[in-house]
Length: 329
Picture: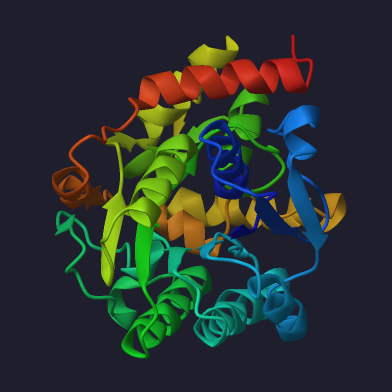
Protein backbone atom coordinates (compact mmCIF):
# COMPACT_ATOMS: atom_id res chain seq x y z
CA UNK A 1 0.00 0.00 0.00
CA UNK A 2 1.27 3.45 -0.99
CA UNK A 3 0.44 6.61 0.98
CA UNK A 4 0.81 10.07 -0.61
CA UNK A 5 0.34 13.34 1.27
CA UNK A 6 -0.35 16.58 -0.59
CA UNK A 7 -2.11 14.66 -3.33
CA UNK A 8 -3.81 17.76 -4.71
CA UNK A 9 -0.60 19.75 -5.14
CA UNK A 10 1.61 20.21 -8.19
CA UNK A 11 4.06 17.44 -7.29
CA UNK A 12 1.51 15.24 -5.54
CA UNK A 13 -0.85 15.09 -8.50
CA UNK A 14 2.01 14.38 -10.95
CA UNK A 15 3.22 11.65 -8.60
CA UNK A 16 -0.22 10.05 -8.31
CA UNK A 17 -0.63 10.03 -12.09
CA UNK A 18 2.71 8.24 -12.56
CA UNK A 19 2.05 5.77 -9.75
CA UNK A 20 -1.21 4.80 -11.46
CA UNK A 21 0.49 4.50 -14.84
CA UNK A 22 3.11 2.19 -13.34
CA UNK A 23 0.42 0.30 -11.39
CA UNK A 24 2.17 1.07 -8.11
CA UNK A 25 -0.74 0.54 -5.79
CA UNK A 26 -3.13 0.36 -4.09
CA UNK A 27 -2.86 4.06 -3.21
CA UNK A 28 -4.16 6.24 -0.38
CA UNK A 29 -3.94 10.01 -0.89
CA UNK A 30 -4.39 12.73 1.72
CA UNK A 31 -5.89 16.05 0.64
CA UNK A 32 -7.08 19.14 2.52
CA UNK A 33 -9.68 20.85 0.34
CA UNK A 34 -9.94 19.46 -3.19
CA UNK A 35 -8.97 16.48 -5.34
CA UNK A 36 -6.35 17.38 -8.02
CA UNK A 37 -7.30 18.81 -11.40
CA UNK A 38 -4.66 16.84 -13.31
CA UNK A 39 -6.24 13.41 -12.87
CA UNK A 40 -9.03 12.04 -15.03
CA UNK A 41 -12.24 10.78 -13.43
CA UNK A 42 -11.14 7.22 -14.09
CA UNK A 43 -7.81 7.86 -12.37
CA UNK A 44 -9.45 9.52 -9.38
CA UNK A 45 -11.63 6.47 -8.81
CA UNK A 46 -8.56 4.25 -8.51
CA UNK A 47 -7.33 6.12 -5.42
CA UNK A 48 -8.62 6.02 -1.85
CA UNK A 49 -9.01 9.72 -1.01
CA UNK A 50 -8.75 10.79 2.63
CA UNK A 51 -9.64 14.33 3.66
CA UNK A 52 -7.49 15.67 6.45
CA UNK A 53 -4.05 17.05 7.15
CA UNK A 54 -0.68 16.10 8.55
CA UNK A 55 -1.43 17.72 11.93
CA UNK A 56 -3.89 14.91 12.74
CA UNK A 57 -1.60 12.34 14.34
CA UNK A 58 -4.35 9.79 14.96
CA UNK A 59 -5.40 9.91 11.32
CA UNK A 60 -1.82 9.47 10.12
CA UNK A 61 -1.33 6.53 12.46
CA UNK A 62 -4.51 4.86 11.19
CA UNK A 63 -3.54 5.35 7.54
CA UNK A 64 0.04 4.10 7.92
CA UNK A 65 -0.90 0.91 9.74
CA UNK A 66 -1.60 -0.71 6.37
CA UNK A 67 1.08 1.06 4.29
CA UNK A 68 4.56 0.13 3.14
CA UNK A 69 5.66 3.21 1.22
CA UNK A 70 5.14 6.90 2.04
CA UNK A 71 5.62 9.93 -0.21
CA UNK A 72 5.42 13.14 1.82
CA UNK A 73 4.56 15.98 -0.59
CA UNK A 74 2.27 18.07 1.65
CA UNK A 75 3.53 21.57 2.42
CA UNK A 76 2.39 25.17 2.47
CA UNK A 77 4.32 27.25 -0.06
CA UNK A 78 3.81 30.91 0.74
CA UNK A 79 5.79 34.12 1.03
CA UNK A 80 2.91 36.09 2.53
CA UNK A 81 2.67 36.91 6.23
CA UNK A 82 -1.01 35.93 6.37
CA UNK A 83 -0.13 32.23 5.99
CA UNK A 84 3.08 32.21 8.01
CA UNK A 85 1.70 30.58 11.16
CA UNK A 86 -0.06 27.87 9.16
CA UNK A 87 3.11 27.28 7.13
CA UNK A 88 5.24 26.72 10.23
CA UNK A 89 2.67 24.27 11.62
CA UNK A 90 2.14 22.23 8.45
CA UNK A 91 5.70 22.20 7.19
CA UNK A 92 7.57 21.53 10.43
CA UNK A 93 5.14 19.99 12.90
CA UNK A 94 3.35 18.12 10.13
CA UNK A 95 6.62 16.59 8.87
CA UNK A 96 7.58 15.62 12.43
CA UNK A 97 4.22 13.84 12.74
CA UNK A 98 4.79 12.02 9.45
CA UNK A 99 8.26 10.88 10.51
CA UNK A 100 7.08 9.73 13.94
CA UNK A 101 4.17 7.74 12.53
CA UNK A 102 6.38 6.22 9.83
CA UNK A 103 8.81 5.02 12.51
CA UNK A 104 5.98 3.77 14.71
CA UNK A 105 4.43 1.78 11.87
CA UNK A 106 7.69 0.40 10.45
CA UNK A 107 7.21 1.99 7.02
CA UNK A 108 9.51 0.31 4.47
CA UNK A 109 10.61 3.60 2.86
CA UNK A 110 9.84 7.32 3.15
CA UNK A 111 10.44 9.90 0.38
CA UNK A 112 10.30 13.56 1.41
CA UNK A 113 9.82 16.56 -0.88
CA UNK A 114 12.00 19.36 0.44
CA UNK A 115 13.16 22.36 -1.62
CA UNK A 116 16.25 24.25 -2.72
CA UNK A 117 14.93 26.86 -0.29
CA UNK A 118 16.07 24.50 2.49
CA UNK A 119 19.65 25.13 1.34
CA UNK A 120 19.38 28.91 1.14
CA UNK A 121 19.07 30.68 -2.20
CA UNK A 122 20.93 33.97 -1.70
CA UNK A 123 24.24 32.69 -3.09
CA UNK A 124 25.19 34.99 -5.96
CA UNK A 125 27.64 33.35 -8.35
CA UNK A 126 28.00 30.18 -6.25
CA UNK A 127 26.99 26.79 -7.63
CA UNK A 128 24.79 24.99 -5.11
CA UNK A 129 25.10 21.25 -4.50
CA UNK A 130 23.64 18.77 -2.02
CA UNK A 131 26.61 19.46 0.27
CA UNK A 132 25.92 23.20 0.46
CA UNK A 133 24.85 24.04 4.00
CA UNK A 134 21.88 26.21 4.93
CA UNK A 135 22.74 29.40 6.80
CA UNK A 136 20.61 32.20 8.13
CA UNK A 137 22.62 34.64 6.02
CA UNK A 138 21.75 32.92 2.73
CA UNK A 139 18.07 32.44 3.55
CA UNK A 140 15.64 35.23 2.76
CA UNK A 141 12.26 33.67 3.48
CA UNK A 142 10.21 32.08 6.23
CA UNK A 143 9.29 29.40 3.70
CA UNK A 144 12.97 28.51 3.33
CA UNK A 145 13.36 28.27 7.10
CA UNK A 146 10.34 25.97 7.43
CA UNK A 147 11.65 23.68 4.68
CA UNK A 148 15.08 23.55 6.31
CA UNK A 149 13.55 22.66 9.69
CA UNK A 150 11.15 20.13 8.16
CA UNK A 151 14.08 18.47 6.39
CA UNK A 152 15.86 18.29 9.75
CA UNK A 153 12.92 16.26 11.04
CA UNK A 154 13.49 13.73 8.26
CA UNK A 155 17.21 13.54 9.04
CA UNK A 156 16.28 13.02 12.69
CA UNK A 157 14.04 10.14 11.59
CA UNK A 158 16.88 8.67 9.53
CA UNK A 159 19.04 8.81 12.65
CA UNK A 160 16.35 6.84 14.46
CA UNK A 161 16.25 4.14 11.80
CA UNK A 162 13.90 5.49 9.12
CA UNK A 163 14.73 4.34 5.59
CA UNK A 164 14.32 7.65 3.74
CA UNK A 165 15.55 9.87 0.92
CA UNK A 166 14.99 13.58 0.20
CA UNK A 167 14.51 15.54 -3.01
CA UNK A 168 15.26 19.26 -3.22
CA UNK A 169 13.57 20.65 -6.36
CA UNK A 170 14.25 24.10 -7.74
CA UNK A 171 11.22 26.07 -9.03
CA UNK A 172 8.71 23.42 -10.15
CA UNK A 173 6.73 23.88 -13.36
CA UNK A 174 3.80 21.82 -14.61
CA UNK A 175 0.05 21.44 -14.91
CA UNK A 176 -2.01 22.52 -11.90
CA UNK A 177 -4.30 25.22 -10.53
CA UNK A 178 -2.73 28.51 -11.60
CA UNK A 179 -4.08 30.37 -8.59
CA UNK A 180 -1.40 28.89 -6.34
CA UNK A 181 2.32 28.24 -6.13
CA UNK A 182 4.76 28.47 -9.01
CA UNK A 183 2.02 27.90 -11.62
CA UNK A 184 0.70 31.36 -10.70
CA UNK A 185 3.59 32.68 -12.81
CA UNK A 186 1.75 31.42 -15.90
CA UNK A 187 -1.38 33.35 -14.97
CA UNK A 188 0.61 36.55 -14.44
CA UNK A 189 2.27 36.24 -17.83
CA UNK A 190 -1.01 35.36 -19.57
CA UNK A 191 -2.49 38.55 -18.06
CA UNK A 192 0.56 40.40 -19.47
CA UNK A 193 2.36 41.30 -16.26
CA UNK A 194 4.79 43.96 -17.54
CA UNK A 195 7.82 43.47 -15.27
CA UNK A 196 10.83 41.16 -15.28
CA UNK A 197 13.85 41.18 -12.98
CA UNK A 198 17.56 40.76 -13.59
CA UNK A 199 17.80 37.51 -11.61
CA UNK A 200 17.43 33.88 -12.56
CA UNK A 201 17.23 30.41 -11.05
CA UNK A 202 16.75 26.73 -11.78
CA UNK A 203 13.55 25.13 -13.02
CA UNK A 204 12.35 21.53 -13.07
CA UNK A 205 9.31 19.66 -14.40
CA UNK A 206 6.87 18.28 -11.80
CA UNK A 207 6.86 15.03 -13.80
CA UNK A 208 10.62 14.74 -13.32
CA UNK A 209 10.33 15.28 -9.57
CA UNK A 210 7.72 12.51 -9.43
CA UNK A 211 9.83 10.17 -11.58
CA UNK A 212 12.88 10.61 -9.34
CA UNK A 213 10.79 9.98 -6.21
CA UNK A 214 9.43 6.72 -7.62
CA UNK A 215 12.91 5.61 -8.69
CA UNK A 216 14.28 6.39 -5.23
CA UNK A 217 11.44 4.43 -3.64
CA UNK A 218 12.32 1.39 -5.76
CA UNK A 219 16.06 1.72 -5.09
CA UNK A 220 18.26 0.81 -2.14
CA UNK A 221 19.31 4.46 -1.80
CA UNK A 222 18.75 5.88 1.67
CA UNK A 223 19.99 8.78 3.81
CA UNK A 224 20.66 10.90 0.70
CA UNK A 225 19.32 14.19 -0.65
CA UNK A 226 19.06 15.11 -4.33
CA UNK A 227 18.96 18.53 -5.96
CA UNK A 228 16.54 18.48 -8.90
CA UNK A 229 16.98 21.23 -11.48
CA UNK A 230 16.81 20.80 -15.25
CA UNK A 231 18.11 24.18 -16.45
CA UNK A 232 18.98 27.67 -15.29
CA UNK A 233 16.99 30.48 -16.90
CA UNK A 234 16.86 34.19 -16.27
CA UNK A 235 13.40 35.35 -15.28
CA UNK A 236 13.24 37.34 -18.49
CA UNK A 237 13.92 34.14 -20.49
CA UNK A 238 11.29 32.21 -18.53
CA UNK A 239 8.64 34.90 -18.91
CA UNK A 240 9.35 35.28 -22.62
CA UNK A 241 8.97 31.52 -23.21
CA UNK A 242 5.68 31.42 -21.28
CA UNK A 243 4.37 34.44 -23.18
CA UNK A 244 5.22 32.71 -26.47
CA UNK A 245 3.36 29.62 -25.29
CA UNK A 246 0.24 31.71 -24.73
CA UNK A 247 0.75 33.96 -27.73
CA UNK A 248 0.77 37.11 -25.62
CA UNK A 249 3.17 40.04 -25.20
CA UNK A 250 6.19 39.25 -23.02
CA UNK A 251 7.16 41.52 -20.09
CA UNK A 252 9.13 44.50 -21.36
CA UNK A 253 10.07 46.47 -18.22
CA UNK A 254 13.18 45.69 -16.21
CA UNK A 255 12.45 45.98 -12.49
CA UNK A 256 15.65 47.23 -10.87
CA UNK A 257 16.08 46.55 -7.13
CA UNK A 258 14.53 49.84 -6.01
CA UNK A 259 11.65 49.33 -8.46
CA UNK A 260 11.13 45.78 -7.17
CA UNK A 261 10.49 47.26 -3.74
CA UNK A 262 7.86 49.51 -5.26
CA UNK A 263 6.23 46.69 -7.27
CA UNK A 264 5.89 44.31 -4.32
CA UNK A 265 4.20 47.07 -2.33
CA UNK A 266 1.79 47.67 -5.22
CA UNK A 267 1.09 43.92 -5.39
CA UNK A 268 0.45 43.83 -1.63
CA UNK A 269 -2.07 46.65 -2.01
CA UNK A 270 -3.87 44.78 -4.79
CA UNK A 271 -3.94 41.63 -2.64
CA UNK A 272 -5.74 43.51 0.13
CA UNK A 273 -8.69 44.11 -2.21
CA UNK A 274 -8.59 40.82 -4.15
CA UNK A 275 -8.12 38.61 -1.07
CA UNK A 276 -5.49 36.64 -3.01
CA UNK A 277 -1.83 36.13 -2.25
CA UNK A 278 0.44 38.40 -4.32
CA UNK A 279 2.93 36.70 -6.61
CA UNK A 280 5.59 39.26 -5.65
CA UNK A 281 6.29 39.92 -1.97
CA UNK A 282 9.15 41.53 -0.06
CA UNK A 283 10.82 38.10 0.16
CA UNK A 284 10.38 37.11 -3.49
CA UNK A 285 11.39 40.59 -4.67
CA UNK A 286 14.87 40.14 -3.21
CA UNK A 287 15.19 36.58 -4.60
CA UNK A 288 14.17 37.82 -8.05
CA UNK A 289 17.32 39.95 -8.26
CA UNK A 290 19.68 37.03 -7.55
CA UNK A 291 21.17 34.62 -10.10
CA UNK A 292 21.20 31.16 -8.50
CA UNK A 293 22.82 28.08 -10.07
CA UNK A 294 22.29 24.45 -9.07
CA UNK A 295 24.36 21.35 -9.79
CA UNK A 296 21.93 18.43 -10.26
CA UNK A 297 24.50 15.92 -11.51
CA UNK A 298 24.27 13.67 -8.43
CA UNK A 299 20.81 12.34 -9.29
CA UNK A 300 21.91 11.47 -12.81
CA UNK A 301 24.97 9.64 -11.46
CA UNK A 302 23.00 7.51 -8.99
CA UNK A 303 19.96 7.07 -11.27
CA UNK A 304 21.72 6.64 -14.65
CA UNK A 305 18.50 5.98 -16.57
CA UNK A 306 17.04 9.35 -15.61
CA UNK A 307 17.24 12.54 -17.67
CA UNK A 308 15.57 15.91 -17.14
CA UNK A 309 12.81 17.19 -19.40
CA UNK A 310 13.89 20.33 -21.31
CA UNK A 311 12.24 23.43 -19.85
CA UNK A 312 10.95 24.46 -23.29
CA UNK A 313 9.00 21.21 -23.48
CA UNK A 314 7.63 21.67 -19.95
CA UNK A 315 6.46 25.22 -20.69
CA UNK A 316 4.85 24.26 -23.99
CA UNK A 317 2.96 21.37 -22.38
CA UNK A 318 1.86 23.45 -19.40
CA UNK A 319 0.61 26.35 -21.52
CA UNK A 320 -1.36 23.94 -23.70
CA UNK A 321 -2.96 22.30 -20.66
CA UNK A 322 -3.82 25.65 -19.04
CA UNK A 323 -5.36 26.96 -22.27
CA UNK A 324 -7.56 23.89 -22.51
CA UNK A 325 -8.49 23.74 -18.83
CA UNK A 326 -9.29 27.46 -18.45
CA UNK A 327 -10.74 27.81 -21.99
CA UNK A 328 -8.29 30.59 -22.84
CA UNK A 329 -8.37 32.34 -26.19
